[in-house]
Image 1 (cartoon, rainbow, N blue to C red):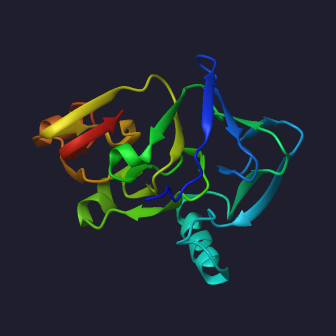
Image 2 (tube, one colour):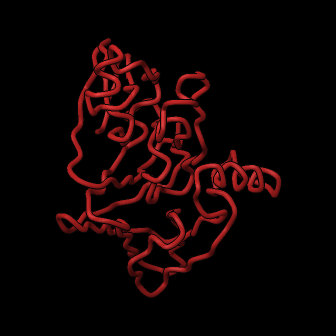
Length: 224
């Protein structure tokens, strides 16, 4: 079966302030958050659109619904589409908005779905669906902080996330991991997310770790 997403090549440069350079064949497109572009070569055309350009977000109402959901994450209504209109390969680069790391994600290798923090998405190959993932558990809504409204990426191509500081990747094998809610960057879609009390009353109020911790359970990759 052919890929839904455009197949793009890339190179990441830098250490603390990283840039990802995406190479596009003629006709290929990469979709990015508004304001993420650093530079682009001649032949690259860009256009602000409502929606990510995936099949799910196609059409006016699909784009409008997607834009409405993006308001909940605090992101811009529009995403910027960069297309190579030239006859040869063209390159466009995107930079992190603050010091940290850019993380390449091959969605096809992760079951086609990744959940990430609402401000972690940087750019992705056209065909990637970018939507929100609301944690339906009541505890997450009241106490989960950053973990209540997340972003969901679906597709079979490359996506790029960014996060401040050093990123640590862990592999869960039918295991659970308790984490500060603000330290989760992303996790594979098959991982279950919940929030639980940090401990006894003394630990919750005087332990310095907050009232709750996030718990990730299952099998798959987690990025912190």
